[in-house]
Image (cartoon, rainbow, N blue to C red):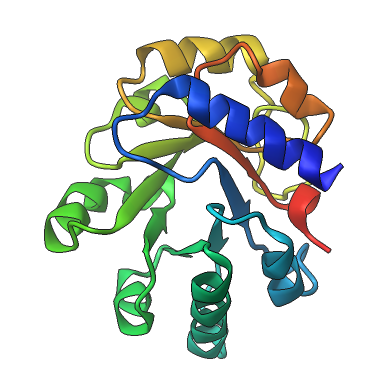
Length: 198
């Protein structure tokens, strides 16, 4: 099941013919729903990215440094959620910004030109906001995330992807079964929490 999701993400990524290579698969950590982040990270295929969301945890820097080591060893990338300072300190590959901080994407990319900078988007307007290299649109399918809104479905996602003028990732209820419903959508790849955890 896990590898089916990874393969689907890779197919989508290759079909999108992105000028700048972005990871096909984003693993979003969640303190409540990801019991063992490091074990999950070790299972990711090379080229995938971990999006570490610490939500201000006391041990966030230690966790980030451990994940940097895993990422380097396994050919992964590490993005830090909502904390550019932590990303810079640990030598991460970039940041993922919640929608409320998406306006920082442009300045961060100018300051750190080698970083990958993604931003959350819950609709077309947010997906089209300039600055981020890619938008992570959610929720696509029903999700157990406490922050997930009503699912928008594959058809609305396809409309967003056609008009967003930037690469799009699908997040929210994405797993090896639902991902197949996205094969006709032009996406940079897929993003998941529970489908990639151990």
